[in-house]
Structure formats: structure tokens, C-alpha cells
Length: 553
Image (cartoon, rainbow, N blue to C red):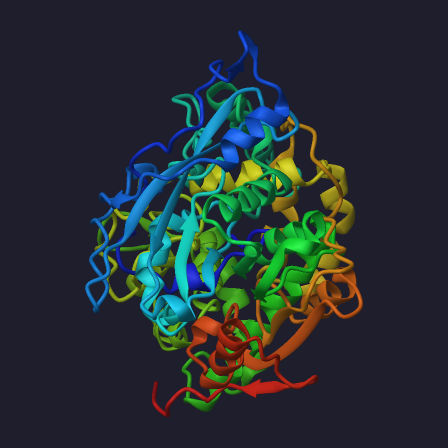
């Protein structure tokens, strides 16, 4: 089902095996309990000094660990530049820097340009929350090669993710989430099972990761980014945040407005929304995106119906039918309504998935669920062999091992629940369900019930919405996509308003899919590159238009 947090299409684009992990610890930061001076425990200031003075021990990257998603070690870039990995020590609790610590996994590729032209490091967060930046960056490096002419490309596993003290919510007694209905009928055993699953998951998270669980929120991750900036030797943080990464970037700007360098936020999260409002906005965003798909499908002669409205209605009816009677497939499994929603949701993140979605829906309507099953497994979000934060290649559905051991779903839940103080009940969802159904009969129910995800969470959340006001910060380039399903276009304007006058600077992309830069649109890339490389902002009100899919595709 869709979730009420934004997920990056940049990570969706990374359909090869996940490619990197961290290796060695840094020096000279002290280990837990060893930060001492003059025979006593180190003060917070002494601990901070030791943290800032670290020198990462950069080495060749090994294959990513299972918790990062697995796969092969990253290959050298075309010019021979090798990927380097290291770890960086950070406080477990930034309010107690002299206390316990954790290691953050880092990856980088050094700049390809002359030393005199180098600006510094460009730090990436690709969204989620919960995606491994260490594993993702190498697979997307070709998109950012021009930026490497003046920057070292750098990413990291945020705390609680991958090789940065991964949150784990597994338990032998926990039911398989594929057996839990994402869109339960109210008042039934399905709803009881969903409530029980959420509470049991929260208990398993506390049991397995209780020490780190209170410290994986976005504010602590933003403080980690400032430590990364200092250790890498940069006066300012140059940053590229996508999807949830825009929220992380906004929080960083709020905490450290004077330390913001050239920053781009693409696929912008609306910082004014609480969890329920964000989910409702996403329901409308996915509905709009699906209507755009349906209009395109009708133009292609789609067998689902004549005209976009009929195609939408046919898909809603098909989902309901599959929810009642799953469609058997040759491997002995069956495709249900949740699988259809997973497939449609994932395909809407990138327009070039639309032709495959058309084939899948047409075949399923004709009684053949194999293509729909493959697409759900490639792009689905819960328990069916895939996750939109790190999907398999929909052209290679047999690539079934890439994220099997990843902790992304656990980290997603932990970070989301640490950030949000909202704790919704079944009664809360029931009262808002009509709004969600009106926004989208296909996506609304799953998003409404996803509001229960933090039920029973052992850590109180931080706030109803993130604080991103950043008076005094330099311009931050915000890229909003008019067809974005996961972070609707309006979020960019609201982020600009909350950042403050003269800080948020908008660029509009009239396109489809989640985010804009990784769509490959030349206009968007040129504008973003001009700012990051040369400090040139686009004209106010600038708009980039997407090119249509080729006929017949």
C-alpha cells in the first residue's frame, strides 16, 4: 500500500543490485565509555571536539551487507575512480555527546575535476525514510556525473538504517505482513489482525532495538549531517535531498541556517501536514497521477475501457474483485487487491513504467495475473519481495533477492514514528475514512489505515510536523512536479513559505512520476546543475515541461 511518507523515485531508478556498504571505523574518536580527560569522564565539549577531529579511514567498498539490501560491490566509475567507504562516529543522543555513540556508514566518489575547481562535497539523501544511501548512490552515479566535476559525491546510511545501527523489528512470533490486509473491512477480523500486527511490530522493535529507537528521528539525523560536513572539511553543507530527503534538508536548514551551502530539494515534502493530512494529500496525489496514466492509456487504445474515467472505474472494480477472490497464478500463489494497489502505486513513481502497468492491468482483467504479480513483486511495498525504497527491476522479476534482508521497512516505521507525535486510533481512521474514499477509492483506504502504523509505539514522537523555518539561510532550490503522486506539487510552495522569505526558491516541472531530476528531463537537470555548479538560480516562475512518452510505448 502507499505510505504516508514520501519515497524517492531516485531510489526507484536504482534497479540494479544495491551496490555499496561501509567498512572500517574512523579515528580518533573514542569508544563508548572511553572519552576521558585528566582521569575523569570527558565533558560534552571535549567529546564534540573529538568527534569533529575524526579522520575517516577511507577504503575500497565491499559488497553491501544484507541489512543494506545485498548485492555486488560497486564498480569503479568510467574514469577509473573507485568508490570509497568508511564509518564516522556520532553520539547516540546528540543531547548527550559525551555518552554512548554509534557508527554512521559513509560512501564517496572523489571529484573528477581539477582541485582548483572543486567546491567541496555534495551530500545526498534519496528518501524513504529508511533507504541506504551507501547502497543507492553508486547505482545512480551516472545521473550525477556532471556534478562530480566540482564535488565529491557523498552519501550515508542515516542512523537506524543499513550499516548505521540498523533498527530491527523482526520476531519469530510476528505474522508475515503479506498475510495482513492493508485495506481491512471495518469491524472484521482483518481489522483486528492489522491492529494486532502494528502493536506486535512496535513491541518487536523495542525488544530488538530499544537502545537506538529513541534516537533515529530526523532532527538527530540532521545533526549527523553537520558532523559529516565538519569531518569532510567543508565550511558549508552542499546538499541534494530527494523526497523525504527534502524534509531532512529543511530540518537541517532550520538547525544550521548559516551553514547551508548550495542545496536542492526535489520532490518536496509538505512541512505543514500532520500524518493524517499527509496521507490524505497523498491519496489525492496518487489519484491524480493514476488519472493521468488512464488518459495516456486511453490514447493508446487501452483495452480497459474507452476514456480515462472508464479505465479508472474498471481498475477500482478489478481491485475490489481481486480483494474478494484473488486471481490464481501458475506458481501456486494468487494476486489479490493489495497486490494490484502495490503494482499501480509503484508504477506511478516513474512514467516509463506506465507501458508495463498497462499490460499488467489488461492481462489481469482478462484473467491472467502473472504480469501484475511480477510488477507487484518488483515495485510493491509490503512483504511481496520488494519495497519502493529499493525495488527490483520490473524488467527482471526473477531478481528476487536484492532487498530480502534489508531493514528499510523497519527503519521507515521507526523514523516516521519518532518524528510524528500523532498516535491515531481505529476511531480516528473511521471518522476520516469518507474523506479518503472521496479523494481516491483505489488508494484512499490503504493510506487511511496506514495512519495506525505508530499504534503502540514505545517512543513519543517529536511533533505534528517538522520545523523548517530558516531565516538567514541562503537560497534553497525547490523542485516541484505537477504530476507527483507521493509529494504533491503544492508541497514545494508550502516548503518555500515555511523556509522563509528569500530562502525557498521554486522551479516547476510539468511532468509525471515522483521527483524531477531523475526523470532525465534536460531542462530540470540544466537548472539544477547551474545552481549547484555555478550558483545560478533559474528565473522566478521558471517552468520545465516533460516530453511525452513515445507513441506506442
